[in-house]
Image (tube, rainbow, N blue to C red; front, top):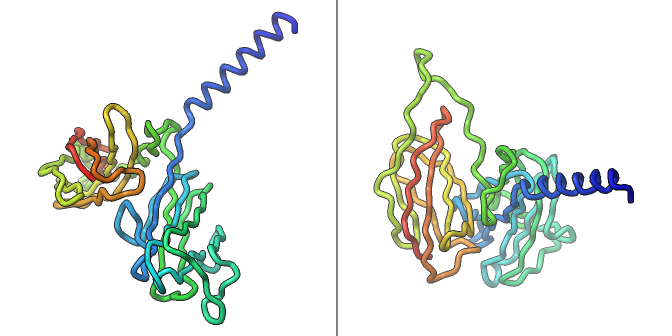
Length: 247
């Protein structure tokens, strides 16, 4: 290879490595199927919020008849998925064992609703897929903070410049408990030593909030440090607070 061609090839390889290094690390989000309900492991609700490119894994955590459920996208959904295409929920039923899983990756932004074909009115869930912010990763397997909401000036046209603040931050009964001065998007980075092992996001309300720490990916009985921050509707970012937690 000629010297000039070799230099061009080396430069191109370096550029590709830089792109790869700046790619956002994707994350997997757990949903528990138990007690005839879909429960997101981060929010404790039937709604799972993820970033484009992330995946969702449903876990059949019930026992006996409580495993007879499907994960099926609603009719007309922009993305179709079905854990049990051979079951219709009326004359043929799914067969699952405790511990079974079903995983779906969501490559585009949007809202995707789903249900259980056996219990279509009782068991419903929603996957909210949001665009990534910037392109950098959240570090250590996290998914980075979500994009802050568009700034909305309060009445009178004066932009809000007051950042949200935390108080009463503590760990109680395997929950991270804290108070917020105003509604905000909250990012929780869980560290073991200097490494971020998991990143979570939640919508915080003014006043008291709680976040369950018993999530897949965190080991029971291990002490971690949780670093929390918040961004309000005007884009103001809080100071970070840290607390030692034990799952």
